[in-house]
Image 1 (cartoon, rainbow, N blue to C red):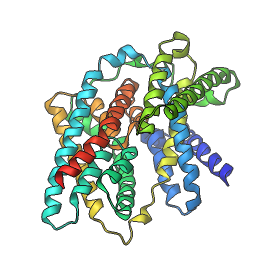
Image 2 (image 1 turned 135 degrees about the vertical axis):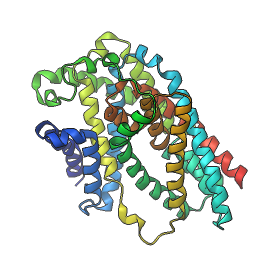
Image 3 (image 1 turned 45 degrees about the horizontal axis):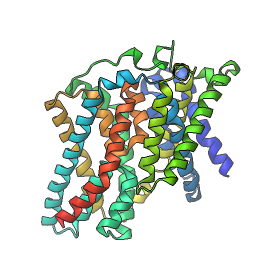
Image 4 (image 1 turned 180 degrees about the horizontal axis):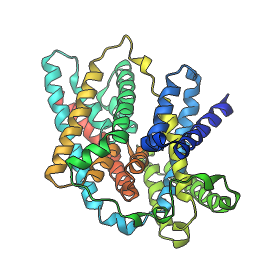
Length: 378
């Protein structure tokens, strides 16, 4: 069964890409959004038993860990330097936005008689700046009950899925009209200079396999070294450290011309992102919304919509471009592993490194901010 699950999640993106190559309607929707929709349908079809959850988690972790270095291999770091400042400012504005909205919701929920609304505020700020890895630490710091924590986490997964659907579909069209927008430079990556970076057929051609194998092998080496160093260094957030190491080693490798010009490394990395997209979407279960306390859902939904709107308004005031806003929003709300998805949807690989960097900063501050705010409001 484990082998069957692995083949299923590896094969579904291939079917999606076949549709994109063959049909105009699929091309208009886009491969990344189709993969996410396919995962949601699969996860809520009843075909996957609860026992598949462990395999799904392992596939998502392996896919994103191997994909990040391969995508970073093709980056031109000089192109990133021009937008780094805007990305960091946008991440700061995202943090300000979610904190302000969480405090406002805390006030409303306390007046409505909700028990311990400071816990919801602390958890929300932590998860919408640093992502899920920070949630367990904030739970412990604020002594949140296990049942409330699990319910909060479930609602976050479901709302995060809806948020990603919005960001991958309507958001690029919407925010590129509301915020300043500059078309991405074609020279942002080596892959972008290829004739067609949407053509994944070379992955099946034997002459392409040596280059792909070299890129994959180098990525495996980077993952192994990053995991080894992550286990050796005494830090509280191992996930943040490993992603930081993966990013750093991927950037260092991209400085070598031979690595940056590896053929089809970008397509191979993106295919793993498609695998990640299908698998992570299949983990969302809408049936989990039945017969539960909806207070955490209302708090999270208000914080998500409110902070997104406030973040967009602040970015408009500070003249931050639309793509930087969207990639940092995804980095803050969903965490760095989801950044390649939005960068692909935007057709702007130049924002990839900025989004990952902003997300890592969110990892670093999420625990401190969530626990501190929760304790202060209590």
